[in-house]
Length: 287
Image 1: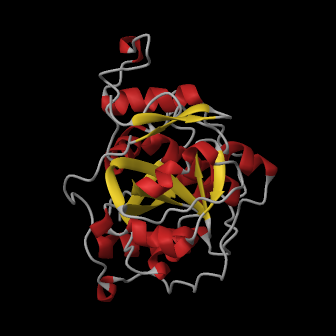
Image 2: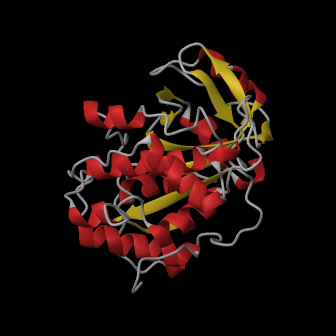
């Protein structure tokens, strides 16, 4: 079994260590702005935050199995997509733990029948975040793969705040993130509460791989909680040299709904295609 469980007084236990460090840059490269040929990208607002709905917050507060297995990479993407659907003015996607576990099993080979009495399972081996994105791009979201579709994704330049903000603006309000949590960050897990602060500072530890979406400026969603973080510290932890990564995702909901960013759906898709081409991402069909 990858990672370990951390006791928590409210949730019983929480899993850390399920995100594997990227083995190779199979997708993405440094941004070359001269290659961008899409519509002008608006300046992101001072604050991007679409979590002002009780239904959105309810979706972000689902555990999606990350108290039982190392499926944080799956929970990361599902939480982001729930927020994106809401921000597009569409019915929120009601992802549940069984669905997350089905995806985790299909994408990684996890077999729940091999769990022993102590909760250990030799097939619970976590995943690379890009592997989960690629699987969802190819297979959709069971049991109804057509209920939502991940159409594209591209890696974000995490050396500066602006690309992350652009990813949130164009991507519907959230970006998916992977970090190597510091031991300092892990030490706070037993005392984390929904709506509380989480200090992510400290030396990244690859043994503490974890994934979560940035769901607003200064907010991440993980382990059934929405937590306040320092954006400058998060950006530092997301940098490649620190074992981090961040991805913008484009879902079909964005093409169907009215985006709160005010960007027309067609322009958003064109921006996403243009940035993805300049970054070596996986683009929508026909890009």
